[in-house]
Image 1 (tube, rainbow, N blue to C red):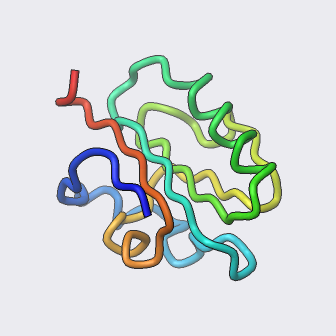
Image 2 (image 1 turned 45 degrees about the vertical axis):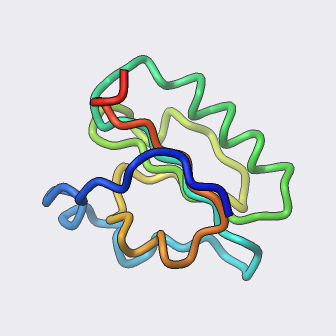
Length: 106
């Protein structure tokens, strides 16, 4: 397991997003979470590259975009779910690796 960055409290809006109950990618491969800031930092290309990279790995991926990026702008292969929000407290007990860059880390 690799841990990068702090675990901040999930914002209240992360619990109100529709796909919370259906965040899991299909399968039982190791799970990787990629989460960027919920503040716009022109992170489209980083998220797209992460989705492509996870697509060639034997893992399941969850990419959360926050409010700043429309998940539809991040094409993803079948083993990767791209969602605006999922409370990370639901995912982190199950992850293999976690990469998160909060807006406060500049």
